[in-house]
Image (tube, rainbow, N blue to C red):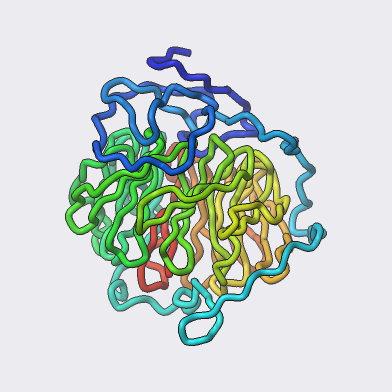
Length: 440
């Protein structure tokens, strides 16, 4: 396998496939322009990286660079961790709960009531900003370099257009007025007008694997996975602010604390979850969860961070204050994507390598049931009324629509090669904090 830089990638089989491009044995070299020069040094010393050679935190020389392919790279297992395969739960059956986990800390709002970060998403009522926007599912086909547009009323693809190279997610803007296709290897965002469902312009942005916005809407956070950094921009004009170097490889998915100050991001190839203070724009903590952490979501009260871990076949529970793993729930092979039910009582987990969806109960912190849905379920969206899950099938080039009452697949819609970060838009909520639609 040809390399431009010295890269110690560990090529693994499908059972431990990661989060990047859908090809299973490829890691290509591409031309990448110089990134922003202002680098914020992380406050934690970087360990030896699994594939090394990336130099200083947050920086990489312009020109030819090797691209760590998320489907073929994996960090060495953390010492003492059992990362072997485990029996998957039977379809639609109860899964015995594990040992009791620590009780959640109570949090209250300024008015004295309990915190619920999903309070504004629990009703199917849409914001006036999007009340007249037609409902569509936008599917980035990573390997095809296209976006498919589905009309949920007919369950049919009504449009398809070319974007950049390796589009991974379709991210609604913070104010819900635009959609951005994250073209990571083209170093660009394709902007879409959701009223027409068509592209309007291309914005040059280095390596946008993923995209987030601070809850106050003042900063856009571009997750530049290849460069091991977070690039911060002003979303009003996409002017660059600064970069935050991440000392651990594979930064990709994230969520915000209840107060919006801290940004928690998984580092897939390093087995770490990092905590970034968005006021000082520095790394202030990390949690070692081992193996291949992917998607992350907070509990409704903001006291527990749930981390899908593809290599450990389950979900880690992390205390965001102490940055320690306080529990682990086995779900199924290749635990990958996460999404919260409309009533904020349930967390859905896609187990990509065994074609199942697990249902976690937030109140009991236990796996309630697991549905056999087939395919390779990846990223998840939920319908406004909470009755359907829209799930991309990464290796089948399709989207499945699943009934949340019983786990039944009601439709499977062919889209294109490498179907990834599907976005069902519009959705309830005041604003979006990123990814394929995480609303508050």
